[in-house]
Structure formats: structure tokens, C-alpha cells
Image (spheres, rainbow, N blue to C red):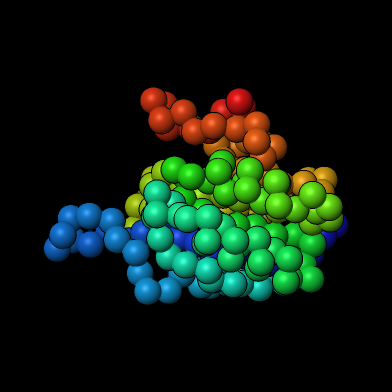
Length: 168
């Protein structure tokens, strides 16, 4: 069983926090994922983290995707989990698949429709745990883990009418 996981953090709804003054979800200055996994979940694996940005994925650019690609190439880890906003997650997965033709790593992108912190009914914790299990057991490749399903990059779309990902 694979033990070491490297996280690449990019923001997305999973990272947002509800601001009671503006009554809107907003980003924090730093990611909550490392503390969530170490203090709350007490994950029993070796985890490392690289924060690329804290943005809504609608603001994701190819330059930012290039930074994600660079982070993937730079890490020696073979198991990589990327937290990402759901609006353009499939675009980033496809970008990685196109730019990593000789990929020898298991890369799983995940996120949430509802912020992880402060919302008891968030799908974020479940999606994160499911993605962590998949990155340790799936074959080498690039995937999206959402809604208790694992999708190959390039073979998935977000169905905005039902708020779920499905095979393309």
C-alpha cells in the first residue's frame, strides 16, 4: 500500500469560509486542508503540501495550470492529490493529461460543492477522504474523485443541473 501523499492546493469551494458579515463564502489567506487532515482527521500517512493559489476555479488560468503541472513534475511523490474548484476541475485534469504524456504518478483532483469548514452537510470531507483512498489504490493516471466515483481525466463533466460529476 502506498503511504506518502503530496497535496497541491489551489482553493475552490472546499477552501471557502462563510463570512457572516457579507453573508458570502470567501477564501482565507491560507489553506485549511493541512490542519483539517492533521488535527481533525489525524491521517495516518505521510502528507506534504504545496499551496499554488487560493482562488475560485472560474479564475483558473493556463498560467496557473502550468504552475500546477510544474509542482507535479517537481515532487518526487508518486501519489498526488490536487484540491481544486469544481467549475473547471475537468479542464485542469485534461490539461495535466495532455502535458504529462509519460506520467508515472497517480494524480487525483477533488473538491466540494459546499465549503468544508463551518457547513456540517459539506461534501468536502467525504470527497477528500475518498480521493485520499483512491490516490493510494488507483493505477497510475490522472483522475477526478467526486460523488464517490473516480473518473478518468478527459472522460468527465460537471452536470450543473444536478450538481454532480458524471462520465462523458
